[in-house]
Length: 116
Image (cartoon, rainbow, N blue to C red; front, side, top):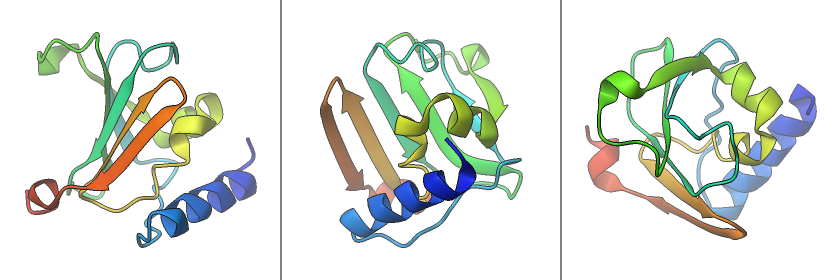
């Protein structure tokens, strides 16, 4: 997906959830667990306040066992290129969460996350 189309999708997502548009830079890092790129299992995303080089997004699947050493970081452009259906949520601001389970999506603001 080209960057203009991705940006449009992200803006629409933010408008849908009545949230400010806070896009991630292509060079910012996203934390991902095993299974994220498979695209076949439920996924959860949460955006924490983070240093400038990080997007704040953590994307995990059921394969994540709580061991942070099993996580890896990737540049956002890898998510945008490979997973546009997930990337559309990633302009939501700090404190937002989303869960994707098949066709079902759940998006909400978590004040406790925003205050971390």
